[in-house]
Image (cartoon, rainbow, N blue to C red):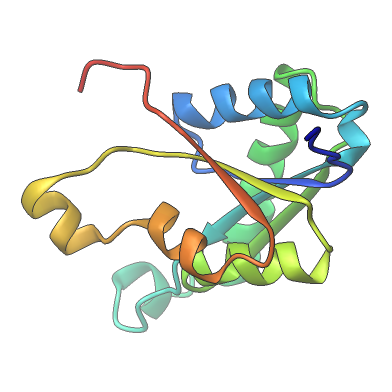
Length: 145
């Protein structure tokens, strides 16, 4: 059975794995316009110094991340992809975004955390798998960590 894919969502954390995921997505789709790149920022801590001093806001963070996302898309040959920057819980935001955009596939890199690191950080990929409204392709890590 062939997989028909017209809309692919790729979560971006700006790691090397993100670039690999974009490359894989571009192999699956016909045009970068079918690609949705999303970065989810964690909510700001209200007591952090940058927030208290007014130097860091969701607007300033969103602008900087959007600029970085545009550059990443361009550098990876995905100019024309849809870009989104949101604030919230990454796994849930990614699944909600895919649902709103009627995605056929979420393509997410796995960072392969294990042991205590996984216990404390949780797994975005696992949360996406649990809540996704569509198929999810989790890419294996290619580094030696």
